[in-house]
Length: 376
Ligand SMILES: Cc1cc2nc3c(=O)[nH]c(=O)nc-3n(C[C@H](O)[C@H](O)[C@H](O)COP(=O)(O)OP(=O)(O)OC[C@H]3O[C@@H](n4cnc5c(N)ncnc54)[C@H](O)[C@@H]3O)c2cc1C
Picture (tube, rainbow, N blue to C red):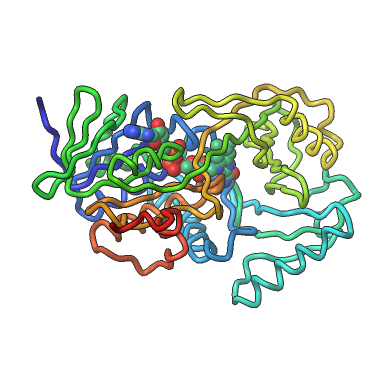
């Protein structure tokens, strides 16, 4: 049997796996990405591709701000801007009782020394988004945020990986891992890979992959649903979400309205499939037409779901395995991992090649989800 030898094997060819591989290759590691289906098949291909620092968990703000700086110079990182447009993201208050939460959030973030989140009043809201229903009262906005094109992003990261000499092995699901003579030996059907370090970027299946190496990590699952309408005349530029409802609303460059916000369908991990719940999805369509009455007649062109891992604190898992030598985890992005892609790849490369990173990742340690089962 042919063994293919590398310094690092990345399990999972979503955006986090590709970004880790890209940075690892640039740091001089011979790297393979091993993907069960094809690159971008799961969450990274289903994503709404919102690029948001707004309303992040406080622990995520430092890496999210660094990621945002990278998004603004993405062409210098992967050779394409990935369709990123910085038209801002805003969180709208529909009623008086929604305003205090936004004002408190702005004050909390400012007290910590961050300036990226800013309250705007109804007049500024209407100036920025004239199509918004006049009942909306104000919003918290991050003006440097925006959205990208998910498929352009996957293609750009993949091409950049290939230019750096990364091997991409598709149609290869890793089913076993064994440590011998200081290397990991991975089996994927008829193929065998050997590497001294392994990055677990297996998305919704990451707990199963971790278990192959002896790490028992508690991980939930989500299957977020999305709607895209037919093309309509230009309506808005920022991405709009709203307090108290599951809604994220934007317009693509092609004119389609893209409606999400975390409404959940159902997922079957074994079959790698997820399904839309139309009655739940209708709530998203209703929220969109309440906020933007002009879209009431727009026809829905398609809807879809994507499967992703969710942690109990909604923070990702980024760090070194406490049990398995040479294993590194990057998963559990809980519905907001697209924006973090460029910076986490750099963090993983630091961890693998230097054994440490200067970024603050303590809150993302795998041990917090291992319930005392770590480090035997
Ligand atoms: C509908 C939807 C909307 C979203 N909207 C946003 C948004 O607006 N903004 C934002 O920041 N984030 C958003 N997200 C979240 C974001 O898309 C994800 O956090 C991100 O794409 C996760 O990337 P990943 O590489 O970790 O996972 P994935 O893209 O799922 O990649 C994991 C890969 O691992 C592979 N794999 C699994 N097991 C194995 C194995 N044993 N061997 C080999 N390969 C394996 C899988 O086939 C898969 O391709 C959204 C997600 C969804 C689903």
